[in-house]
Length: 185
Image 1 (spheres, rainbow, N blue to C red):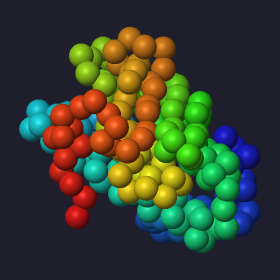
Image 2 (image 1 turned 60 degrees about the vertical axis):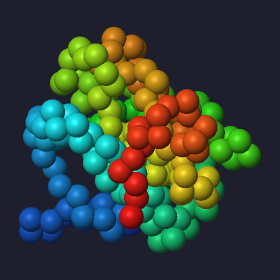
Image 3 (image 1 turned 180 degrees about the horizontal axis):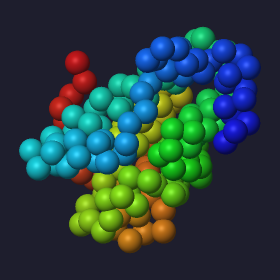
């Protein structure tokens, strides 16, 4: 993890100023994970986890667009490497890509050491709405298809050893139409 920090600092893509942190020209903040978890639990109680997913989808798409546009990351392999490194650096967990099939527009991700799942503890439903959104948006950008969505098929909060995500066009999931709604503007 320190290698990526060194690389980012050496090319001035991780900057610390008075009350500001920028990572790859994007403003970021550090906050206790419990703060995020509290917000997510409030959204869950209101039936609004789709809002977390949609916001993260938009951010994931934008970040991958920025990586390609501003940093010349013109291969999926380089974008996947940097994307997983940034999630790890931010303390969310360890992401690996099991399948990336451009022709079938299908991606399988494994996500281990999820700090959110550790903090949440045992649950009855998957809890990784933010990560799911980031992965869907980033995959949509790399696959060139804004209809890409993600489903968390395994979750550490359900007792699984790791979280697993499938990304593909939303209409290909056997789910009710409302699952991915609140539509993007």
